[in-house]
Length: 264
Ligand code: SF4
Image (cartoon, rainbow, N blue to C red; front, side):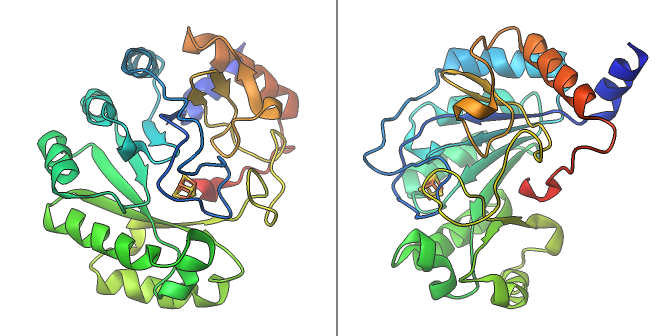
């Protein structure tokens, strides 16, 4: 038991929420197999509120909203508002849907605990568009500048791919030129899941757990809401899933897990 309670104290629990699975893009490396024609599979606002309430009670450090493209959803602003009033909250987006109406709604809920994380895979279009599609880099850059102009807290996420791995220094110089510091840029490896036929094989054995909710239940990590990473189909109470994850971790400890810290 002592080992268990230490684990709870030491571990920084993160909660991920898949808000939906449809997206305005169809990136060829998308682990969620999202696209404009993917079924939406949206999670409800009521479920999000309960997840956030229980995450607060259980001492989670942060909530991440991902998809699909969450900004497609009408209720995303209410979700982000509820979450960021209670915990540090990150919205993952491709940055391409930030029209005046969406921007105004984001601005209306902005606070110090809300961060918008935009995916940017290169300092030049060809390094980003290779996996995301022609014209996406330019539109994402417009989205980044719009967020900056409106004073939203912003960070960048880069997936390292064969197209950009030799150009990451140039990307860093580029984001610095945009006024985005190193601490607001993360680089994560390509994973072989979903549409991606390249990258790291990931599993419960080599992923540090980050509890991930979708409308079907709770998973080990946001890289795959698939059967092998399913923790439970019973979303509530969250504490039961945490106990299952702890038990699994204790089986693997010590030294058997090599957490891939760079994903978030
Ligand atoms: S990687 Fe992101 S932007 Fe691309 S299709 Fe998947 S969810 Fe959409």
